[in-house]
Image 1 (cartoon, rainbow, N blue to C red):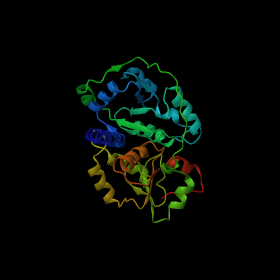
Image 2 (cartoon, rainbow, N blue to C red):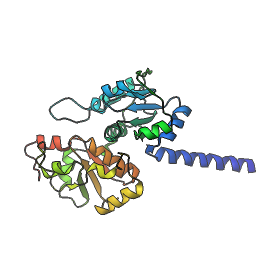
Image 3 (cartoon, rainbow, N blue to C red):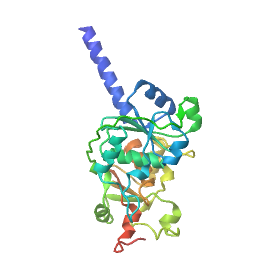
Length: 285
């Protein structure tokens, strides 16, 4: 009887540990090195442009440049149809069940965008590895110039609409006290003094995406993010909609506020500023 109880306790502890591990969005270089050794099926995604990937990347990483997941057209930055995204992922050997770690050039912009896209189309287990070469060297991460060979897989899209905001939803939220619209661009873009910007969406607060990052581009701690959220009264009873120009920088803020801090209702306006101003009937401030 004692053996059965002990066995059950061990099972519960391991299960709880797995939940904690899966809930951890970011992964350290040291833990990543251990994970790569222990899980031969681990998918590592380099989200940088192809030219950067060709120079050097983590061994066994596949290259999915964040821009490859965008539509072509007059409005830059819109996500492709989920079925197209699923096809791209499948061709790179990624399934819905894959354990995935994504990284970029160290800014966390591109890794966050790919992370958000993966979560939107239904990937179940995704983590972000910050590119810090000092830490990578300590962890002895192996690098290569050779492209990774992979076996195609089937990725079945399962859309997670609760993290996606449409233009219609943004318009409905502008005069809604329970909706907080946040512009994640820099000061000049928000104010309209930048050449590429006429201003910001009506009623939008300004929290540049860099506010969620440390000086070296890594994500701030949960405690630091809680202070930032408190400053702007970001709470679980409000829907928070993030945007930038193309929703690359907004994805950084999404990871920070939703998956590190743990705010419940956080969305990315995928169309972002570019889509908003393409409709000349929309106003900016």
